[in-house]
Length: 383
Image (cartoon, rainbow, N blue to C red; front, side):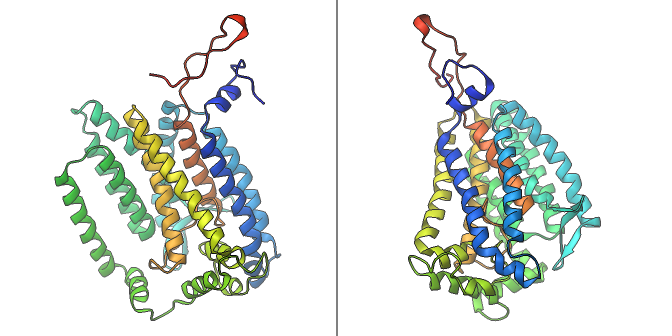
């Protein structure tokens, strides 16, 4: 246990960190490991691997993810901006490289193979994009003569162009939705709201007409015709589990789901641990988002407010999309459930993003000086 008299970086970190956030993130990491043991053996056996191949790799990914999240949480706001700018520049270059030398899967180029590992640059781009846009919005609000909003729009256009070139409609919608929430937080006028809303509607219709796979997924969702096997099995697994589930390892329908360890791990949770466990998982995600927005609203610094709001928004949108697909409330989309679904790139990228949330929500202490009679000055939010 750290003493309040200790002024070391670790002690300061411990007394200023938001422990509710930390507990929620650690809970999701733990749930990811548990559900990986429940969901992945059938998938591994189907493709001729050791039963616990994916579960072991989930643990291997979780260890550096935890380390990265904690390391990033030690940074201050200026260091977060610098890290984000560096990440943004590197990931934009890698996003271009993906289009030429990326690994093609089902007609999309989204992954790079580096040193024997598959990396999805768009996952790492998201937190960097959010933080830099938050900085641009904040600078414009602080000094209106700086065209921060315009630069944020240009950056959005560049990122969307690279995502659509892959193509990746899911990440595109995620980025646009998050950017819109941040722009709203930055105080855009109703004229901008109507204009951007109109552009978004036109963009959805255009995507339906231009991208056959988008049209196919929407049509299958609306009509129920075509290849809906995986989505149907995911929904059936949730129904089969009932309120309390069949028990660990007892799920049968999960064995038929090709991506039960990744995009449909939520359905596996429902079949083996019941709908109550699904509600608990959803509640943890809701808690993170609501607490993040609540903390953001209390922040006096514009950059910190926009960055926290944007980071928890993209986290929340991603989790909602995954859960809605499992519940057949949205067309199928390959979107991972943060910290829980299997995936190295996603795990590390989300850890960086949530490490930024921990860093930006740390209480800003006054300089701690020992007082008379051995007492220490209390840690109070900076005015």
